[in-house]
Image (cartoon, rainbow, N blue to C red; front, side, top):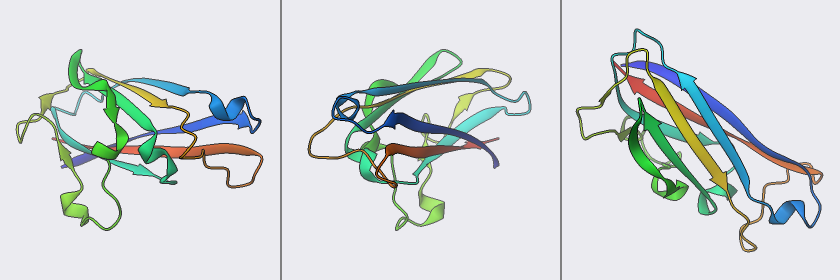
Length: 137
């Protein structure tokens, strides 16, 4: 496999009662390298696990929907206790999807949930990083 990494940061500024009740949305739209023929699968990593119960995302490759925008993150995420070789989430079974010089679009949404707080490592603002590793041929 070849590996490509996409990263984004979820950050909603300083914590105040109104900011904590907001929904944070991110759109990532990138051109894939022309040497990538197929995307076989992907793996997600978050540097903070709080969003797993709140966030959702959608993904499309070359205009083909891989999963809808409301796919819950907990259904796509494997924790560190899963062996590295088993963390890949396959796309289109074992066939993958044609990708050469195409586009990948990710729509990420982190919604307010009073029972799952936003991560606030320094007590002033909340932020976390999401990393998606693409398994490619």
